[in-house]
Length: 221
Ligand code: ZN
Image (cartoon, rainbow, N blue to C red):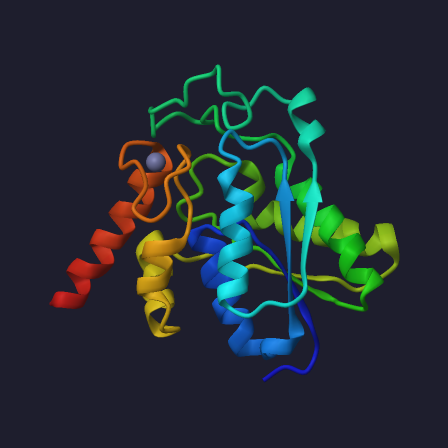
């Protein structure tokens, strides 16, 4: 087990919850903090779910940051209830992309981590099923990590446990960590704000369900 501390960028979704379970194993329960952002998501439930899930895992240090001004500078469908979420999974850049989101999250997480003497920042981004989100790619994360180190003259390590995993492999990881059933029932990934299996129709639910089905089908063999 590592002795240092880690800060998890935490949304209460499948990916960040799996990252949190892994971090608790790697760093030890008392050494993991979470940071959650409210940025005007169309479903305000995400923040409440994040609070409940982190509490379930016994995270005592959970910081909430309000970025609800973000909708003033982006027209992402995720922040605007008037815009219908695009269902075209093949679109190069879906209209749920929130430009700059992970960069902003990592900047604020890094400032907060440095203040606490934390070097490791864990974020559940993934470029395998990245759905056209450019700031989920490894090239971006590496570049952002280097920039943060230069910006604050401090050695951050942005850790991305899911970067190379498919959604099915993320479910497999949750299973190995003993949290598959909890993640399936209690996390929120759905763009329509429905916990667990979700609405079953939005692109996020479809990706999550396809991965789950693929993992379960492989498990039965
Ligand atoms: Zn959904």
